[in-house]
Length: 355
Length: 131
Image (tube, rainbow over the protein chains, first blue to last red):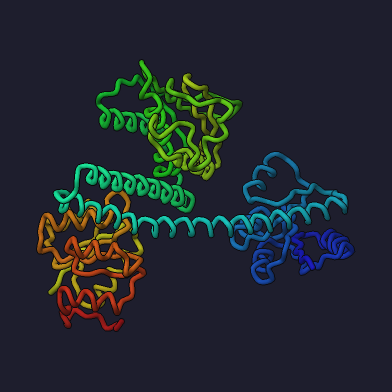
């Protein structure tokens, strides 16, 4: 039987909700008047769902109590309140509620909201477990795959350095191919490891000078590739909040791609800038390189999907998947526009405020 | 008394290895988070023993070993790897490693390997805990 905890400081209201719930076949574990008691009880009895009033008797209000409960015990909380002003709703959102019912509400709405919250909470728990398993799996697989590769490369190297004299030229060529393939696979695994690390690493947010980071990356690319002539323009004063390590990986990938895909372009140009979409600042990185078929834009962020051959543009198709995960982990969005031979533009958003 | 340099990119592994060696009475003179840093440290610290983690980004443990042996053929190095009886261990030995340590670390067998290479630690420095 589904167990429900009711947190409501008006005893008559609490009892009326409790009797309605019992009629629907729920078990009401308790009705409590304060947030403090609710947090305590939630930890001890672990109910399936908590119905929470926002204005409560104690010092802690319902939103604070819900925040504590959802972060500590992952129990779905539904707000039941007479208040629906913007400020309250904005605060309530922060606590990650599974529902928000404005009093007076209909019995049937309460029932439906509880059932939906239970289902969503179950799915979220399942998804979280699956993700954790996948991460630890890909981490250990990547580690275990690398050891044999190091052996393949190392023994080939001994053959090459010590016994090359016993081999005909074609044999030496074969050896160098073996080493090349081993190194390619090693790079692939390292990129996978980074992708998995990006998912697992905790995020530490601080204010980032996007313009400066972008200029530094472009500067490094130019130093590594002194033969290239690329015109770049970086808008001044671009700022956002994010994890410095992760955002640098994302920008390195995006700007590195712009650099790479303009390598066969005359008069190569890269632009890092921003535009406003409603209230939201959208950053973009635009190039005039090889582009991609616009109908395939949705494939760009899938790991291992490549829209160009390895001969044409080297790469393994993990970079943009990594970028997407980084942006999503910050609560941002990322998308791309482009056309074959007409360049590509990658748009993304990042938090504009701390926290 | 034998001195040790630890090269490992994983914070936890570095700390665990450090504390095992320290408690047994070895002097850990340095720790490095990457192969490049480890090679630099080895030049100034000249430790009696260097432990090298195999799985490190950028420069893996085998490359570090090869470079260290090239710089000083008398280096005492142990390679840390998660899979034993692996061709990788054979390769490390060919490149001059004195042995290997299995991850996750087990104090008893790890200390036996270390002792074989650089001898017993100073008993006066030994911690009261016995692994």
